[in-house]
Length: 451
Image (cartoon, rainbow, N blue to C red; front, side, top):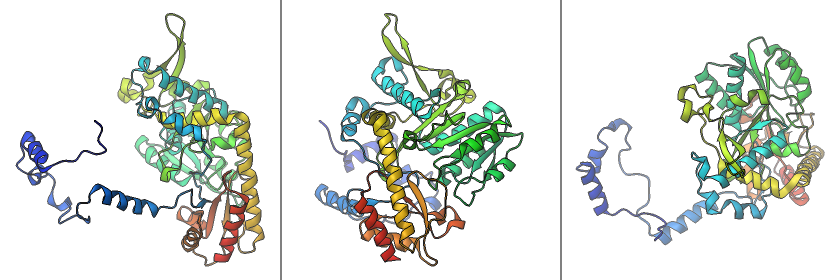
């Protein structure tokens, strides 16, 4: 018999305390100093029955802005893309939905095949030779790329562009502190891309890698062909963080000379879910294959010649080599990687290309409306994918503007002043294939009215 929850009675509590040899709950927590305990009653209501609790939770949920009732123009790493209906039907199957990372791969053939397909898709998208079974998200994948580069080159200096997602740069710094790496930031150019002169000056003989995001945090496309020779001339590695959907129409990291390609698979059929969880991908050139963190699923044949799948290169992993492992990542986002695989298989090459093109066309139409309205300006001139920056009039408060937009049925953009003090009063606006012409026009009309 299945239960939605497990209630605990006073008798259950007494039996549990008796079993562990404690006289009371107070005695159970006696080792925790009173100075750090919560004294007094918790700020909670009295006990609610099931019906009352469900009503209460629904009222709380109704306070959230959702994509069904609000047109979303907020991106900054998590995007409102169309998710084919078939995707949820497949990933909700119990054999996928409840599967754990396969530590005994021979009995997990279906799960391993799904992961193998994900790796194959990532290689095809990125133009790289080898991909792993997935990472926790794009930000941790970038930090792992820096660690790999340091180990492969035996150097300690990592140069990262300031146009890389600020949260990814934060995670990079935390990771670097533990590994003893030096992090140097290259600034932004006036057009919204990496300052190439500053980047070149930051690269020296101890530089393990240059980390660049394209499209970058401002939505702008970086001039990777100009960046690539700067780091390769010093025998360092080029790490590119990419939006996988943009690869439907842009050159792949492999074509651009990247040694490591990472990113977040969220645009590929993974719901926004209030910011996570998502799924990171990680791909490398063949010489770096054995240094790649995480797990890799390989294809083989059994003793009877039948196709089969196994975890390969496991000697790099934490659960086998322990402190000598390439990384402490010994798990992967299998279910969310499956989401990305199903999305890519359903959409196909033409579907991905068409979706990418819609993102470009709709965002550029939106930017033209922003520029034509008179109250907003476009500070950056670099080409962009599906996000762009608008500057609000002097004195306008972005928080107040977004609050009024929310009441009008729109989820506004990201306040860049929160991460870039020099861009106070600038808003990052995302326009995906889900935004209709009417929504785009209404959004900027409402913003003009609010301003």
